[in-house]
Amino acid sequence: MAALSEEVIHEFKEHVGPLVFSTVDANGIPNSIYVTCASLFNPETIIIADNRFDKTKKNILNGSKGSLLFITEEKISFQVKGRIEYHESGEYFDDMKKWNPTKLPGHAAAVIKIEEIYSGASKL
Image 1: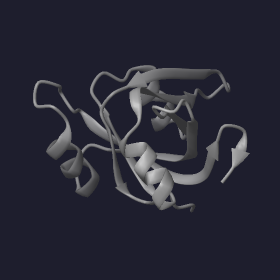
Image 2 (image 1 turned 135 degrees about the vertical axis):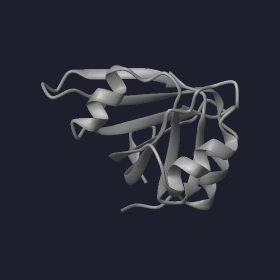
Image 3 (image 1 turned 30 degrees about the vertical axis):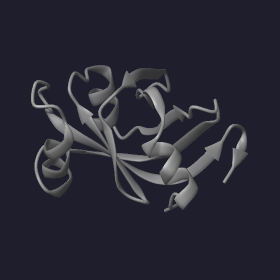
């Protein structure tokens, strides 16, 4: 498992716009969605609220790995990649419910266990 550096943690907390969350289906067909409800759980783990997943949820439940892409105000991109877990209860779910807006359903917590980190094309 990889851990985000203090610099990348800062950039994640200060990212601009929505993040892009990508998974693949059982046939290797990619699916990307915008997400606005994501939070750093610890330097090795990012939680994304499932507010309206469809294909993304199916892909996660079928064992998809995934990536999360974000950009900074300075237009520097960062991407984290890793395996994804889907939690409808427990510690990660409870954490998501604390920061996910109450007007959104928060069906589950998609948890990325970070394995790789990139800035642009450079692996960190």
